[in-house]
Length: 110
Image 1 (cartoon, rainbow, N blue to C red):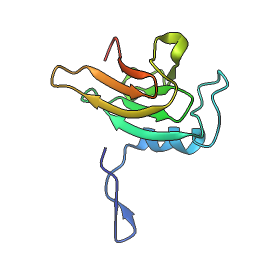
Image 2 (image 1 turned 60 degrees about the vertical axis):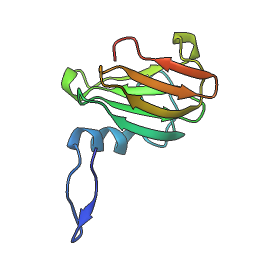
Image 3 (image 1 turned 180 degrees about the vertical axis):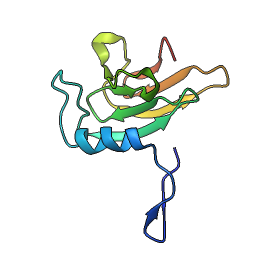
């Protein structure tokens, strides 16, 4: 994801992501598909999905290509190694790896 400003104009930002972030950041996950206020990492994978790593509320995934506009949340109950996300990477095979305070997890469908 490349973001920036040039002469006061945004040079590139995904419009859908901007709308999601605008309406979601600053709110805790309450089962209503909102992002946590504790986002520490943001990553866009090769499929165009956005991953938001939190400092205590797991990881959130948004897929603008799904058409559903849903924000999925994954926590330790879903198999995430820990609740504090410290890094998000994609390997050359397209697998998403998530480092947490409890260890490293691989997203099953990423």
